[in-house]
Amino acid sequence: MTASSSSRVAVIGAGIVGLAAALEIQRSGHHVILIEPDEPGGRQSASYGNGCWLNPGAILPISLPGLWRKVPGFLLDPTGPFVIRWRDLPGLAGWLLDFVLAGRNWRLVEACARTRFELCRSAVDEHIALAQEAGVPELIRREGVMYVYLDRSEFLAEERVWRMRREFGVAFSEVGEAELRAMQPELAARYRFGARLDGGAYVVDPGAYCRALAELVVRRGGERVIARASSFEFAAGQLQAVRTETGPVACDQAVIAAGIGSAALARQAGDRVPLISERGYNVVIPEPGFDIPCGLMPSDGLMGVVATRQGLRLAGQVELASVSAPPNWRRTEILQGFAGKMFPQLKIDETRVDRWMGHRPSTPDGLPCIGVSSGSADVFHCFGHSHTGLIQAPTSGRLVAALVDGRAPPLDPAPFSAGRFG
Ligand SMILES: Cc1cc2nc3c(=O)[nH]c(=O)nc-3n(C[C@H](O)[C@H](O)[C@H](O)COP(=O)(O)OP(=O)(O)OC[C@H]3O[C@@H](n4cnc5c(N)ncnc54)[C@H](O)[C@@H]3O)c2cc1C
Image (cartoon, rainbow, N blue to C red; front, side, top):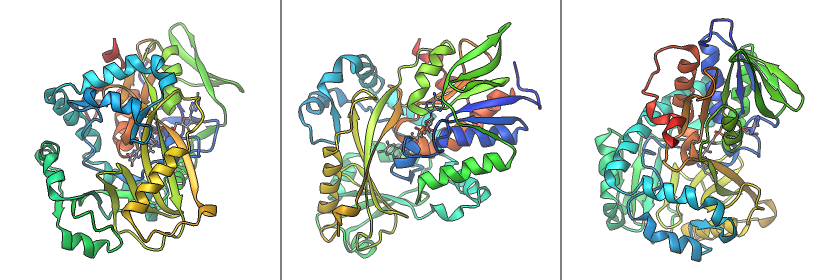
């Protein structure tokens, strides 16, 4: 059923994606019920511990041509930025194969990049507007994000990727050695080149940002139900309620935006979505002894480095393992080791360092799952944003809100359909 102005819409999950969707659905005039067992943007969510980057150039999927050659290394080198836990390999092999195949040629990668660009193109402005509406404009800094290379030849080796960004109109500037030193004197001498996305931004406290958005949903008349959704109740083909452990939550429509918890709910709505956790880690170092002028990512460490309110945050690592496997805190030591190489003067008080592990909700083809479910016209998907859900959240929210509302969508929803997985 198409939402009428009095529709009650349940949004399952209060990470950045669910919150952005909830606010857009409210803007369409509907009553929103946020179902979330934990604190919105709390430590359980990817939205808490991510790399904070709002990168308008995040158009490339992770799987690129030639990746298959690196898979044996992922299995054998436990210190690399991308690892697969042997004991979980049988359960992940199907996803991994689809992942490698999704990026098997540049034609597929370019098509994916074009679609991803649509989710990024206006996102920085949309985040700035959301933060302002929520009364927390100070949480977003529009100071750009920069990839840092050992030298310009490393940057040129990625020429195809940067050319694509240029063709999409994503502005960036090359930063030579002298300028780089002037911007960040603490950076190790071995880094001699940067590529800066001037339109980029970063969030200085993603957890607080989500909390502020959740408060805004409630201020605008939304309800908060502190419970875990488990399934749906239908009568005569229409959604009646979302079932939770504390009882049914009556609603006319529901949006599944539960991050890594979404696949089980999507199955209840008729879709088998191959969603796995690309587990990631962060380390936060309070009072590192210097400031950084923008978000940084070193080419050798592949981690986001950002000055957050709590300290210098290093976020990255991809660990393919089951959701329930215990964290491997050695991965945070790897991040910290890179930070030491990046900033030789870095001050670390080990007693104050915070470490975190969380789940990137990832589909194999680098695109989220957004759209109406196969099993019910009243249940919608909005999950699977993998490495870039922070930047992609506002546009994803606008898209799913239009579909819930029965309006013309702001972008073509076809590439995001759950049906693409067969
Ligand atoms: C290390 C790391 C670095 C990253 N860096 C960046 C970055 O720099 N930029 C960027 O754009 N993206 C980044 N990402 C990705 C981004 O953080 C995620 O894509 C995004 O946070 C996903 O948001 P979400 O709302 O879908 O999921 P989540 O934030 O995980 O939220 C899902 C919510 O659903 C709730 N939930 C789960 N199951 C249920 C249920 N059954 N019923 C009700 N609620 C439920 C959970 O409690 C949780 O609060 C990074 C991720 C990681 C891990």
